[in-house]
Image (cartoon, one colour):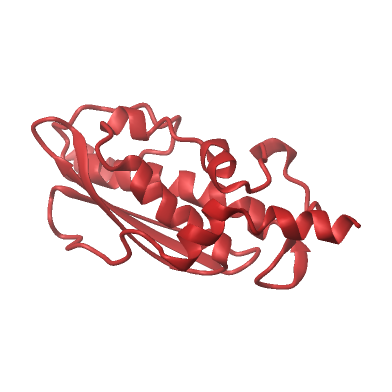
Length: 176
């Protein structure tokens, strides 16, 4: 009975929809100063997620978002949903997105970083009990933060967003 409950959690309509018909796949020119790129990965299950956002420099609003994800269906669905979520958001609002927001929409098991326990959930990609399904929404959260940090690194005059210590520190540029 327990495996069936876990399996049904992975077949929610939103998850299947974003996996079957992903929104906004692709990439943008990373050398464009209005594009921020976040590249994150999960060694536990082999998922890699690249998220790119295009920001209107005048308003600080995300006008476009693209992703490329290599991994399980939950990772692809999380990336797809994240791109639809951030379009039209201001950078400071996008920085507030948490993994639980994505987990709730896609019916992924929610997790708090400090209470992450290996063996808690079953991973459909690796066929192992691991952090894969749980980690997908955390990857999406990390990807948007990394993309915002990259954009702000390219645009020092952009409004500063508190990313709780995730922003890149460019010591060489600051020293110069």
